[in-house]
Length: 132
Image 1 (cartoon, rainbow, N blue to C red):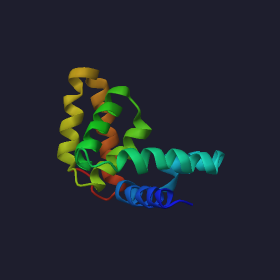
Image 2 (image 1 turned 90 degrees about the vertical axis):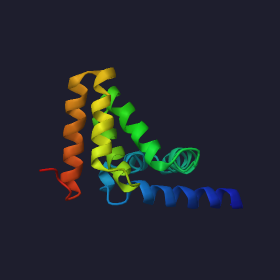
Image 3 (image 1 turned 180 degrees about the horizontal axis):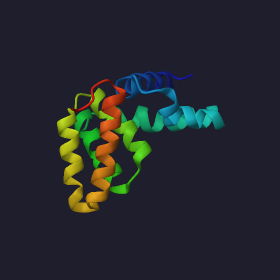
Image 4 (image 1 turned 90 degrees about the horizontal axis):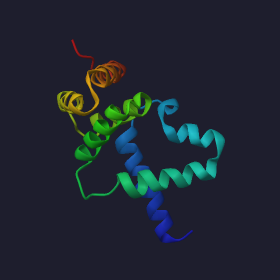
């Protein structure tokens, strides 16, 4: 293997740890992909996690808040759960995440806000950080 591939694998591993630490394996897309095709799962993971998520053009917190916003409006609850988890892992607060979700009411409506806030609540509870 070339050094570049080894570097990419290491960058993918480190970024995945940063974003998805503590997330149950069954909630990780990689786990699902791998159950169908190990090699393709590795390639997809290296692309998204190693090449895209690891970029330093914007802070990881910003990257995850943007992702939470998009997934909220698109109503992608399962993926939203993963990225709320990642946002908390990279230092976003639950208040910041909730604020981004509330902002999406302007673009997606109140129903998407309610669904996303329930997802945030579920993630916080799963992490032992539940809101009162």
